Image 1 (tube, helix red, strand yellow):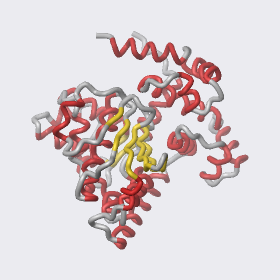
Image 2: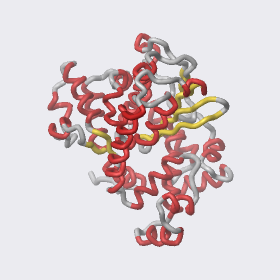
Image 3: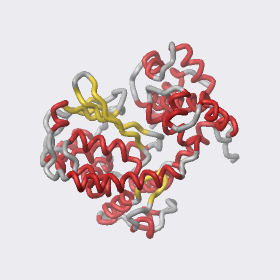
Image 4: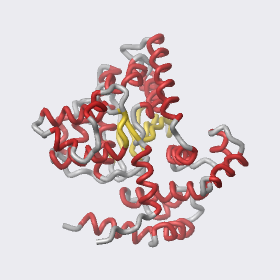
Length: 358
């Protein structure tokens, strides 16, 4: 049977699977966790192209493609639907290297969260983190940078769960007054996880974003291990690691990331050029030399976000169009049809039909 030709979206995903990466320590811990449960190492690593030497390296990184293959193997070999949550609960601050040490030695919880947002790329590229104030609350938001199917759900649940463990490490307790929002529908196994939460935060599902919501006053809570000198030294090391990672970024990838990280408040061409330390004219000329334009990249990013929102939320097409910056739903529908060959409503309907197939 002939392999169907790749669409533009398939090619984009292929590029991102090899561009995005994360420190290998998380893969090493997942492997260790499952081997202890009796899963065979050879079966876990089959088809992942992961070398044992990389797993043992403190500075090794694995691509999103390698993580996707490993997590898919893990979910198949250890069919525990809550595996992502359970993995996240075992992550300690020290797991996150110098970023963990910087957060641990910060003066307040708010400062620790800001450090996490600023230097998260030193640990993983799969998500963009953001902290902002809204309606008198402080919102910590986790956005996917690409959809890796079941592996994405595993990773997101791991990240969200790990913050429960980190709050205990930083404050000595799980803080009160914290709530959670999830884009996905409520998992069938969620109620079974109650004993994993010493103090469960209320969770709302089918929301527009993945968020942890904190009382503003909580951001000023002093941390038990605050140490200004240690924080300064750890942050300096984080900065070095971040610069090393960014050296390898090509222009198209950097533009793509800037837009993805800003979702849904996409910056204008001039703003992106300034952040890349380029004049607008030079920026447009370099994109043209690469066979593309700023608008073409923005359209791809918008469509990626549109597909995710249509598949994973219950927001109306009008609401999604507005969130993505379109002037009205008809403009959004025309753009979506050009990209996907179908209307947003039909795309969502087909997704639901596939999910409901036995």
